[in-house]
Length: 133
Length: 133
DNA sequence: CAGCATCCTCAAGGATACTG
DNA sequence: CAGTATCCTTGAGGATGCTG
Image (cartoon, rainbow over all chains, first blue to last red; front, side, top):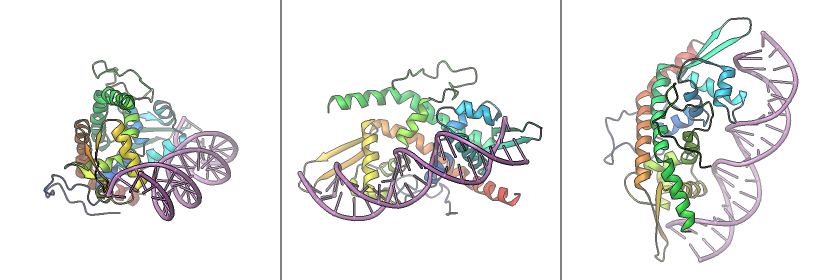
């Protein structure tokens, strides 16, 4: 844990610090932030606070309550998500992106856009390869 | 498979198509492209062709030959990586990013940059939370 | 409703050994 | 050197049931 985090001020000749070491922070952050479910949760929170159940539905597909909570807690612990507890008789909890989380989400949107733009090409390549195989 | 891929031209009122369905392509692409090892392989290929062994060393950390090959094949099948076989007596194979792969890598760089910029803040938050706990 | 605890399954992935 | 095949371990994650 807690490795030193040299800013981009002193990159290697190749450009960025690059993965010869294999300990680049993005790797860890991805694993932290993208436990495969995080990527699904972020867009579900894009337009405001959402409650547990709603979130469960929004993320949908194969997520379980367990995984949702677990991922949510991790994101919260890293300041990417804010958890608001309304102390009402039927418990009411709201999750929303923190400013930091929204910032990260913007990066995700970039990735999402890339995929949208290039997915067809990838699909084409996939087929042409089995074809020439 | 082969879901329709509406370009960002017709987003939902909220912004993008958003994950109510849970079948957004970025999810699948991430799982395809980011089998957790892909993210490590891309930077290792940033500055030109690399051979299997070298790649194994470059990615380093916990990757095994099995996982390397497996991931490489998947990336290749999607046109993100090019595999060149030199038919020499000691087998010689080179991997490099395709133009498509380089394009995707640029997105990864963005993510990487975000992490570099915000990791300290996340770390601070992490600590302050256990503090106020 | 939110969410924790428990049990159990299954497959991702490591280690090892072998081949062209 | 590059790559496959096999075995085996581990833990991610689902299902269920209970609580405040």
